[in-house]
Amino acid sequence: MGRIKTQLVKRVTLELIRQHKDKFKDAFDENKKIVSGLTNVSSKKLRNNIAGYITRLVKNKEEIE
Image 1 (cartoon, helix red, strand yellow):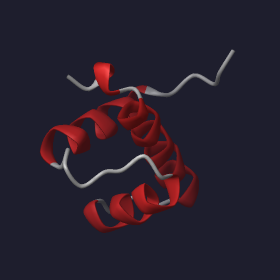
Image 2: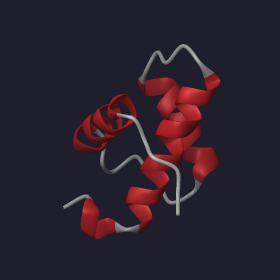
Image 3: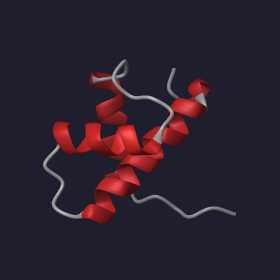
Image 4: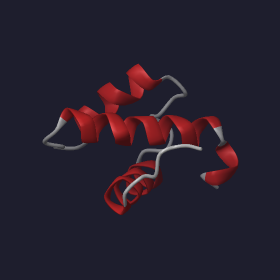
């Protein structure tokens, strides 16, 4: 069983994917840098949660479409 994501992480992630779908890749480190550039997230933990969720969704493309 995995960890549960908060509504904030899900909402921000889905909004980023809708607006910048072609920028994200299936590598966490690259997505982490992209999230830092596109948002002004105040904490490192929140940024990493968003980047990790984006990475998971990109790897499972059927959830995005």
